[in-house]
Length: 588
Image (cartoon, rainbow, N blue to C red):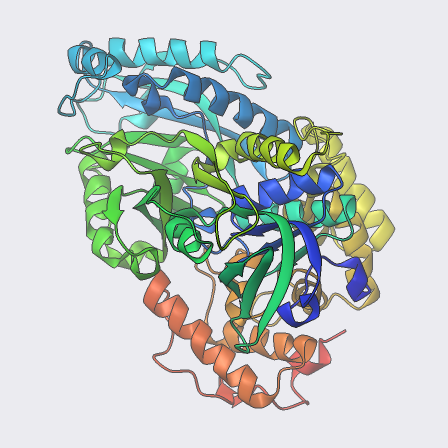
């Protein structure tokens, strides 16, 4: 694919160019605006100081949900819009967003009735364990608010079945069951939105590892985080979609006032086959002893556990390690017949939720509502700044729509299309019926010649785009990697060249699911580093530095058990830079 067919550019090639809108922050909210504006034919540039989706957008609980617990604070409008947007995502991105059966264990009939009612009325109450009647009322209201665009069954409440008595505490008498949704690979959906944006407006561009450092008149100064080079672009409007870094970006743009506060959400990924089998495809929605919610559900062939709600001052300094013992303690408390320890944890991750600044006593009481604010031009900045404040993953499309409407007003342009029923990436023409999906896998096999297993892997990752990709990979041999046989050298090369990869960590942590599944080993990391080096023209020094930095990130920030320091040229007892190795022979 020619470079001009891709949206990704480095800052140097942008120097002196004009865009109708520059968007700062390439998380899900910023990319949502990028996609909606591009659909209207508006030329956009989106920049991020890190990788695309590397902030909170790449570290959620991977749930697409309506927010059952928001009902207690009276956020009915938020729940209604969240459940509707959840239903739309199930339709528009069915290859990545799928229904999630959820159970709430209940031990009493009347627990939490009074405290829930008082919280609903806006009065502060200490958390109380919720009982049968309180949860039944909430779920009935939840179903009612989520009736628009519904694609899933309503709730039900049953006595605990024999197979579940070995999972939950003996005091649990009922299980309330309802449906929400989960997203397999949120970072990939962000990349699909960027690709769709470029398709709709080929002049729109996306740049990662690029920091906004100033604004004067209509000119914005950008700094390439790789080279330190500074360039200037001009714009008619600018969007601050920097999430937890919102206030920092506002200061660089000459904006005043603190709008955003951050709370961190920590998550664990466990390799725990017994718990995974006992959950039987369901998420358990649990309450810890302190009243905080904890979710536990099967994630691929692992178990995902989250999350923590703790205020933070610096989103660049958050870590998960202090929260591991708390989350493991909740599991031991709620699943007393099972054992949990640090050896079960194969991956950890943490994100900082950008919430509207609030006077709430507890982070869980801060509303997840969003707002779109406009700072008019100032003495130094000659263009208006549109600020995105708050919000959550599920409602990104709605927030983007509201922001886009405001930007179109400022630009004096009409809206010419809606994203409401617009498929995303590989969700276009993806069959939701399992039988039709299986036929698509068979068709992919027949056209490309890959095996059924390989065709199934590719359709799971790329949806309807898998057919074209399978043909490409097969034409180049599609030979499996030695340490990750469910990926091939051709696929890794594609990811490197066509998805904006800059660093090895982009590839391992965000373009693939290798890291979050706890599959990364020293040998695998070295093998992929070799492939990336050849695809991206890294010399030996750059390759070794990328390998060292990625290994450090995986160990220190994600709890991955790797060697303390990677040898630059010898892994698994042989040189990874030797052109005679199988890694080199596997390259297309």
